[in-house]
Length: 247
Image (tube, rainbow, N blue to C red; front, side, top):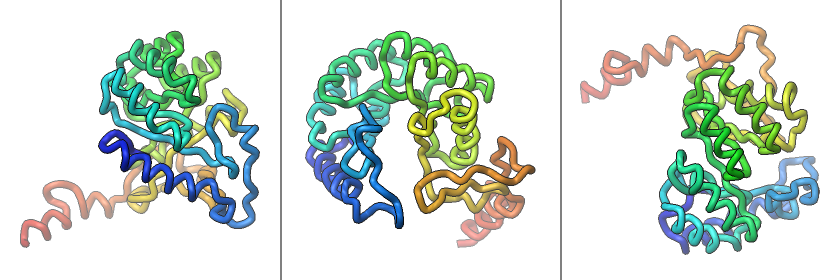
């Protein structure tokens, strides 16, 4: 849930979300509530579902601490990007101040290399590492972060809010699960349900809210787009832009 613009409205929306995700009647068909005891440190509700909040770097350090303290009623697992992404010591202070409230700190989608993650982890500045498949320098750099996160015991939650990122990060999270962490509880993936129809090998999720493991041998680590999408939307000569200019 995005936060930071209006504290009262954030609380209002957070309470609504918690009322939905904490109600067993809203679980997928045939799904059983997960035991919150197996999700220690995530502020899981009675169904095992968790709430995460994201500020997109809107605060300075003192503001972040006081604002997030005021949201403790909605019991978020973590606050994502509470301040400037390269402020290592700022994140460390925020994490220290929020620890007694049971709220963690997550960042990393704007970290451009493994050194930033190394410093974040060495400074005990984050509870969750958020790798970005396009900002980090390829799979080799991502692997370095996955291994460091395993060493420091920090869960990895890849950033997947942009177009094509979902198609990328499913592979990275599978690598983490199969070759590094071996734990499904360590792997949490964002998913945005739009524009997948433009990709040759779109990702998908199942009725239980999990990504489906890619099964097409041609797929690989790819966000190849369809030629028809290029023909329609390539600027400025695509058919979509031609029709807009006529109007």
